[in-house]
Amino acid sequence: MLLSACSGSGSGGSSFTPPGAPEDAGACRYVLEDDITSPTRLINTDSNCDYLLDGWVEVSSLLQIEPGVVVRATADARLVIEGGELSAIGTAQQRIVMEGLSHVSGFWRGINVNSARNIAFDFFDMRDGGQVCSILFCPDVGLMVDNTRLSFTHSSVSNSYVIGMSITGDVEIDAFANNRFFGNSLHGLAVDGNNIPGLDENSDYRGIGDENGIVGVGVHNGDQTRGEIFQWKKINAPYLINGYYNVSGGTLLLDPGVELAFDEGAWFVVEGNGVFKALGTAAEPIIIRGQQARPGYWDGIRFEESPWDSNILEHVVLSHSGNTEGLLSAYAAINLDESHVSVSNTTFKDNSRWAIVCNEPDYPYEPSVITDGGGNTFSNNESGDIDSDCTVR
Image 1 (tube, rainbow, N blue to C red):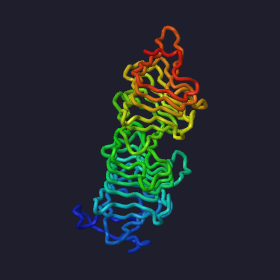
Image 2 (cartoon, one colour; image 1 turned 45 degrees about the vertical axis):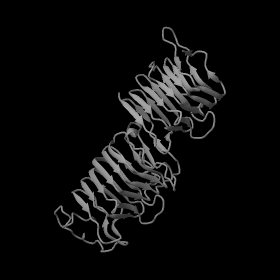
Image 3 (cartoon, rainbow, N blue to C red; image 1 turned 90 degrees about the horizontal axis):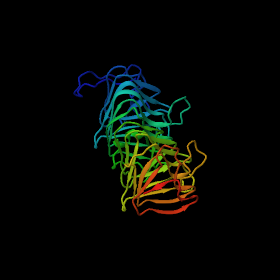
Image 4 (cartoon, one colour; image 1 turned 135 degrees about the vertical axis):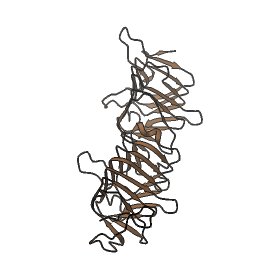
């Protein structure tokens, strides 16, 4: 059962105690167990727990949650937004809380936004959600956001048994700032690469004081195709490429201090109209490495038919590449196939194959070209530094 708009709240309507709902259900004032099919407001009562979320509740209309509301969930409970709208806007003094009846990691299933008109969280804390999902195509995440506009500010996700929060490529981020992800068993946050520019530098993705089980922002496997600049900012944790990421359109721009960490056998491809710019500085180099510090752990960067002088690596440290068991083994930290790249002040170290290798071109195609901007260093690259098939200028 649920509580409709409360009189005296400034929105009209009337308050009621749903038939059969006890005054105090497990120390919660009301029980929330029915689907929400008409505009509904959850009010802040004088109870320590305002609502008990029980079972699977689907929202297909507008659900507003007042500042200070506390919702506690039974084991396996889930809130699903399917075609509806959610506005959970708290304040610094009255944060909104959704948590398990027991503070056990993954006690309840969490929030699934499958399709919504708009989702907004501010001064909102979600705890104890997120279980391993046994249903086909069901994500292992506490707060999943898909196919909506999203505002997520001054909020937190913690104590998930799996990933804390996931944002897919069908989400348009309106605001994302000053959030915290901590104490989750896996990543605190996983996001589609196209939405990474919407993240802010001031959020805590590491979980300082209570680190996530996997430290870093997970990047969903996918392709960057749109012809625009995608800027990945320096944050307080690495971006984790767990499978693959392709840049086939627009420019991927890495800011100084950005760190990319690749899982075993993961690969990164720049192809066609895609451009890659990794612009570090002497004080803040860009780090591109394996998630484990072992030569040959990940694949490497492949440039395929990307003959653009705008491909640039500057003040970058590239290490741990050379995995030969993946689908697209590069056999190098950088593999060039009919491509151009400018490299300066970059360190290639601890790679189990080449630092830079070039595929021998077939006539009449142009050879791959490396523009040497100087200041590059090479160490412990088992196959060698620069392949003789490369043209260096």
